[in-house]
Length: 80
Image (tube, rainbow, N blue to C red; front, side, top):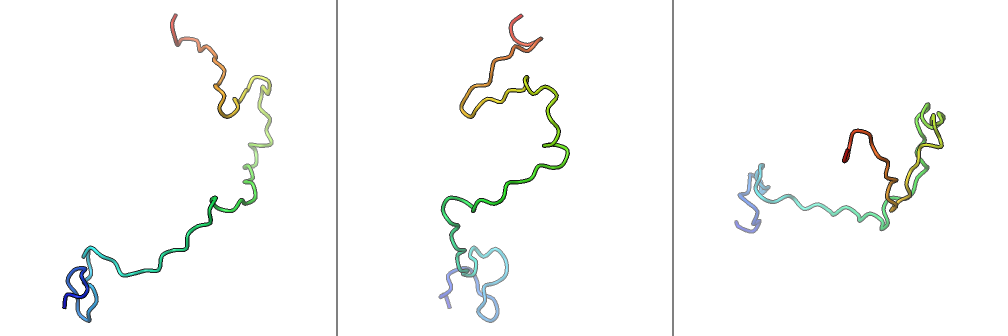
């Protein structure tokens, strides 16, 4: 007795059920490949979203990554 070291033993030498503070040994999962998951096919946009052009293509502006969005004054906000 005393060779398990992880809580009281149950009948048959198995650890007693319940939170005894240890879990049976399991083989560790294989490490995922570095760089993240392999690239898959691009996700298809739901029908009715990508095929509908925006009402005002010239007004909508998306800033590039790392670029600050254009400052557009909003009526009713800021200093009067």
